[in-house]
Length: 173
Image (cartoon, rainbow, N blue to C red; front, top):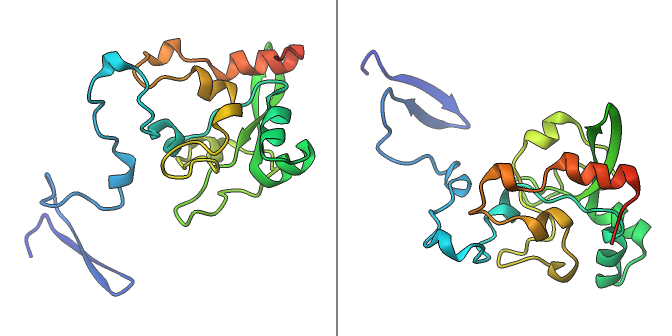
C-alpha cells in the first residue's frame, strides 16, 4: 500500500481512499450530478432535476388548491405531505409551507407538519410529489416550482424571501 492510500473497514467492505482522481465515480454521488441540459435555449424540458434536489415553496392560497387536487382537506394535506419552513422578512420570522423532502430510502426526511431547521434546508432530497417522471400535483404545484426554470440565472429565481413576503402580507392568488 502506498503512502497516499489509507484502508478503512466499513460494513465488511474494504474502502480505499486515493489522492488525485478516482478511477471510478463514487456511486453515492451519481444521483446528485445532473446531466448537462441538451439545449438551454429550450428552457424547461421537464427533466425533474429541480424536483429531485429540493421542493419549492407554496405561496398563500396554494395549499388549498393542491389539497383539492388530491381530494383532501387542507389540514390533512399538510399533515401528510408538507413541512413548515421559515424565512426572515423585514426582521420578522415568517412561516411558509413546502413539500416534504424524501431521504435516500424514500421516506420523509422529517415528519410532515414539522417546522424545519437550517440542517434540513441544507439537505438535498426529492420532493414527496416527484414520482420519477413528473410532479404528482403538477396542476397545483408550488409557486416556486411554477416560476423556476433551471436555465435561468439563480439571481432571477423567485426567492424564499419574496415568497415569505407574500405570506407575511397575506397576498395570494
